[in-house]
Length: 149
Length: 173
Image (tube, rainbow over all chains, first blue to last red; front, side):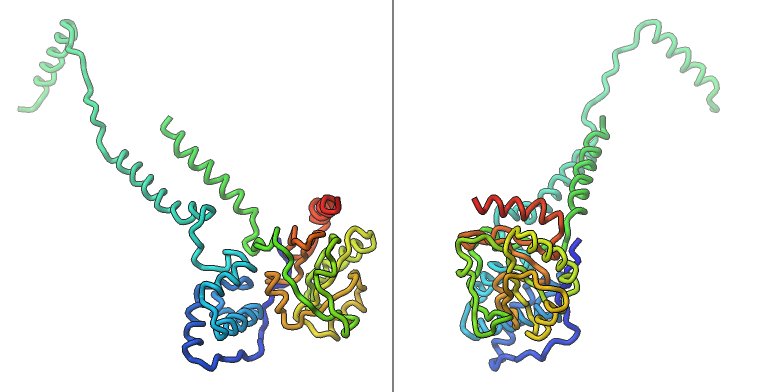
C-alpha cells in the first residue's frame, strides 16, 4: 500500500482572490465537481491540501485568462486522468459504471416477477382405478362416521 | 438445482470483491503513460545559473524521481535509489518538488546524492504538468522522451526488479 507522503498542509499560504466576483463564483461552482487527489473524498473547492491550493490557483489563473470550463477540465484530466472529475465521462470504459445499476435493477425486477407469478401448471391426476375407488369410499365413510354432526 | 443461480452470483461477486480488495484506492493511474514527457526548463539545484530540460535527455532512457526534503517516504526510497545509481542501471534525475534550495541541498548532503543532477520546482508548477499528487513519484522516460512508466509512491525492490530493469533493457534496444 502506498506509504507516500500526501501533501496535506496544516497551514497553506493565504490564497489570492480573483478581482472579479463572477469569476470567483464560477470558480467555486467549477471546483465543486473536481476531486482533490490528496483528500480523495473532498472536492477541490473544499480541500485544504497544498496540491488543492496550487490547483485552485492554477484554475483561477486560467479562468481569468478566459479559458472555458471545458478547456480547464481537459487540462486537469490530461494530467490527472478522468478520476479527477466527479462526473465520470460517458465512454466505453465507463458504460458498465453508468448503465450497470439499471441493468441490475431490471434483471432484479424480472427475477422478482418470475418468483411472484403463481405456477400456471395444473396438476393432472389420472382418474382412480376401481380398487382405489373402493378404498376412497371406505375411507370417506369412516371419516363421515367419526365426524361430529 | 435452485441454488445454482444464487451460488453463481455469489461466486462472481466474491471474485469481484477479492480483486477489488487488492486495489489501492489512493492509486490514480497516470494518463501520461505513452505520452511525451511535458516540457519544462528548470534551474539545476547545484548550479543555479544553468537550466535543464527533458530535451537534454533525448536518445537516452532515464528516470525522473520527484522528491522533497520534507518527504518521509523519500528517505525510505533513498537507499534504493542510491543502490540503483551505484549499480548504474539507469540514470536518475531528481526533481526537488515544492522545496527550498537550502533544504534540498541539506538533504542530499546528509543522505547522499543518487542523482545525476537535481532540478528545482519550488512552486510545483512542473509537478502539476506531470500529474504529481504526492511525493515520491518516479517516471521512466524513453529515448524519444515518452513516459513509459510511472511509480506512485516510493520505488520498491520488487518494482525495480520486475518492471524497471526489464523495461529499461527493452527500451534501450
